[in-house]
Amino acid sequence: MNYRKLLVNILGIAILLGVSFFLMGVLSDMKTTPTSKPREDLKLYVRAEPVVYGNNKAMVSASGRLSSQEEIDVSAEVQGQILSGNVLLKSGTRFQKGDLLLRIFDEEAKNNLKASKSRFMNGIASILPDIRIDFPESYSIYEGFFNAIKIDQALPELPRLNSDKEKVFLASRNILNDYYSIKSAEVRLAKYRIYAPFDGTFTQVYMEVGSVANMGSRIASMIRTDKLELSVPVETSDIYWINIGDKVSVTTQDGTHSWQGKVVRKSGFVDPGTQSISVYINVEATADNPLYQGQYLKAHFSNKTVANSMEIPRNAVFDKNMVYTVVDGVLKKQSVEIHKTSPTTVIFSGLEPNTTVVTEPLINATENTKVEILN
Image 1 (cartoon, rainbow, N blue to C red):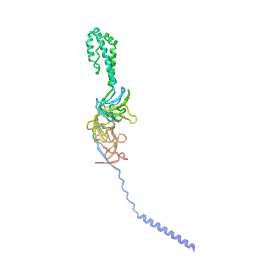
Image 2 (image 1 turned 60 degrees about the vertical axis):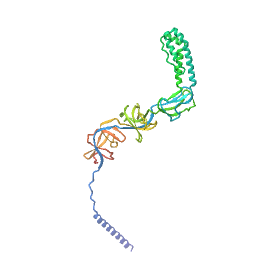
Image 3 (image 1 turned 90 degrees about the vertical axis):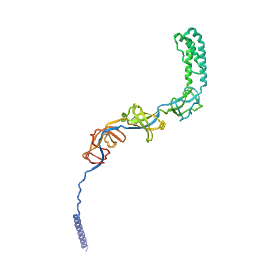
Image 4 (image 1 turned 120 degrees about the horizontal axis):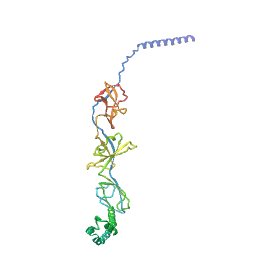
């Protein structure tokens, strides 16, 4: 009984498998094979233009900090109490050339100088009778010199010595020594008053009015405001386009204000940290556009022209000096001669006029790729 049941199950499974294989074959014959289309060649759409040579400006731009051409410290050369001058001795105070910046108490020095002149006059008066006898031809000269001496004024020029005998005579009476001692004291007295050597402003004040200054004491620092210069670092590759005397357009970083400048100096060495060379530009302020030390400005050097050249975007050049051109609808590599590189463009030559040069970067492009030029 069990044997017959097992046989029936085996026959059922065999019949089921046979039917399945039959149906698979029928369905497989009914499937249609899709027709394959021929593969199209890759084509790129590029921006390009014909090579047309002309004159192009070799623009160089760089930013830097404005500083004064003259920045000095005011120090005391004599000792005494600091007194006020014609301007306020405070940081930020502006002054004009010739203004009295400050005084140092000088009454004692003045009185000492007057006493020295009085003694000197007494010495000249005492030798006049001897001069009348020994040097009659010079008497009127020394008499005029004596009458010209004023206690509160600088000594007049000493009469010219006409002979060695006259020189020995004056030296023996200490006239020459007293004269030059007084002239030295007059120079020293002038140091009690400090005048502005230029139009400027105080940047720092270290001693206030009423303080006592010693010789060498640092009183203040000041800068010249009518003579400013801009120091800009220029890449070594661009320095050959800049010469002393070149005119420069100077603007603020946002370009809202502008001034005219001129190159006055070029550094003679390369900064090892930045690989740049400093260029110094004299900038003239105007009443409408004042300038301030420490201000950051941008300089545009553009007076050099490259003849027979063309300018294209910088990213269209690859491998230093290679560009793509379009010849008979396909890309071709060609080398060019680079004259000037800027942050966004290059000026070049080396291609035949009317050659179609690609003016944009191409990603994963190769030679002989078919291209179509965009209008």
